[in-house]
Image (cartoon, rainbow over all chains, first blue to last red; front, side, top):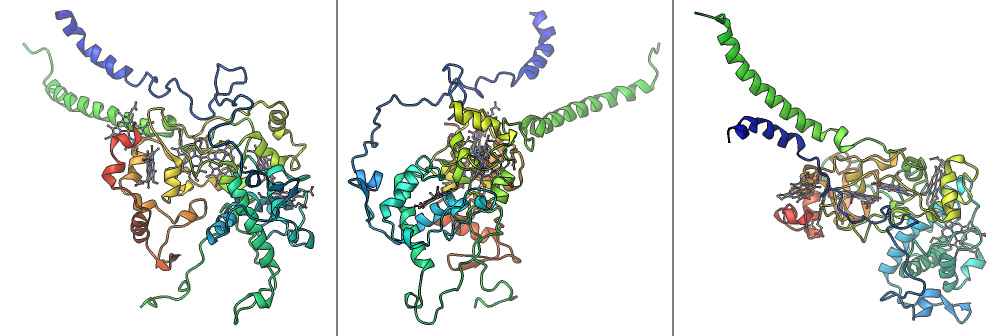
Length: 219
Length: 231
């Protein structure tokens, strides 16, 4: 076939020219999460479950764990034992979801409040200090007045962790000399965390002790 | 009989080398073009229905990534916030701003906001956020200085060599897990030593090597094998 031979350089060129022009494998007929769909009228590929659906593991039998209510009154106990891990997780979640408004120490002067959001009450009032634990759980789950609910963003287990941490925060902000080991002092004011932009809610690691000294002190 | 001048011999010879050089140059140009922002869209900000600014929300207000990208720690998908999340604050803040009209419309009608994707891998690549977060790879290692982006752009090319560059030596990028969301984290250096787990580090490779052990990273051969990302 002499003809083919004549055209082979052209063919070769064509192969190079059309390489990578097909995108089938890049855009496969499947959806990435939350991708737009042309099929459904509301354009969502993520479908809502049919009303009344109970997914496996989502039958909320343990009602106190999911509502914080005993009868129709908020209960005042934790549904699981409080450990150091629970408090640390609670602190982390509180710093993510609550500090924008309530601030790190719960005085209600967070960054968003300083830019015009309604000021929430401080946690360190007698009323909230005496409020039962289930009440806080309820506020996170259902919202309260101007405060939006956090049921979508914070799963129940984390909500309880936050509740435990708020109680710890209330105790710590009201600490007396009798609560701390001998030789230590209760600070007169809560630490300032503002002016730490850009780090999200994550505080930088503490500076190591040897920072301003030069040379060897590790031996 | 001599039709061509003598000099054509030299020209003919030179043109052979010239052609080779030209082909080489074209190949090189193709490769460079393939890696340029023109193809990868790196550092090109995308238009969005609402000019959402990470610089304001993260840099100035200090909101943590997880407030909006709620599933980043435990799934492959980081999550894009629903309109309700914006309305948590914008039910009161900048209430009259025309810029936020699409958000309020979306909230009132229940129609989703249509954000344009910024980072988009081809569908034949498997990527998972949770493992990277839990093994101590910071958001800004991959996404760049998010807290200084008025509009989102992607920092890396998201090409295979970009992924592999890290998978071949992960130690050079690891940080303590609780610093993953810190956009101002700096790697330890002699000027800025880092105190972690009771030890003072002045060198990233030392910290990285310890974290590789502590977080039980698999071998490099394991995470650079094709089936890790193409499954």
